[in-house]
Image (spheres, one colour):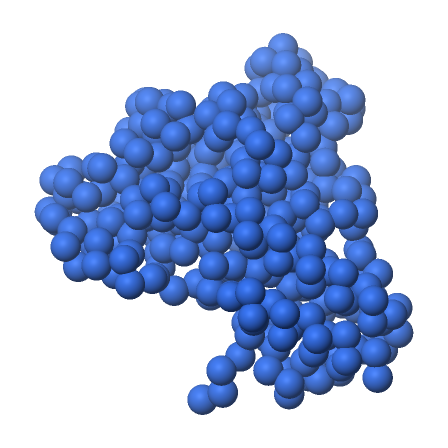
Length: 343
């Protein structure tokens, strides 16, 4: 099989030798009984990093996001999010299907929901015609909006408005640590403005499987039951949790390398004359490019023939960097992109 430089997603990462060793040596038990020491260690580590009381290890970020909605909302409630956020764009309509929660979306071009908009979006709680607006869900970093880091000042304003309006807040932090290192912030500072947080371990952090649902002890206890209902109660999953702990201990600071690589890819693509940035800057490890000339599928095929995999749809190309890419991989990819896309 041909060795590709895989820029489709940071979900393609594989465990390094040291992570595999940690997995092999993990002490395990039955997690449904609360007896897996490696899972307990991971959950305690995640909660500590985010400054929360408790955490719950789950198979995927989708499950973690949905546990937040199921924990914070009742059937018939409404949540507010951005139309490009993962929770509404790529989770199969789960809020409605699983919890009976409707979704109202903000449509700003940069992916940012602003506190000034929320006042116009929430329903009047005293009008019997409307359902209760219960939850605001943000995403950080913003995948479909160029890997943008959500401005902390705007999060603060949204939090203040949410408190005054009796709204709860969830953070889809699938790539939260990309935002943390890019903005030189503390994860616990960002997390302090949210009732629940989801973090993914199997993207840039390099673990093979898993996410964490992080919140108060009461919310995690409720989410644990919902996880079981959804089929997410795992048994001797400490082998996977050990990889997550290794990732959190060793792979956060190195995300700066991925961000540097993304900027190099963006520069190469722009120099080819075939693209322009879909968003104004490259903040983290995701590059979204609009085609100036040509067809996205044709470009993607050209790149594939020369050893590069990318995501292409709707007239845009996405490159995502990750720990599976070396300096030489990025250098080679930049040269291929410049030559293949300028033809």
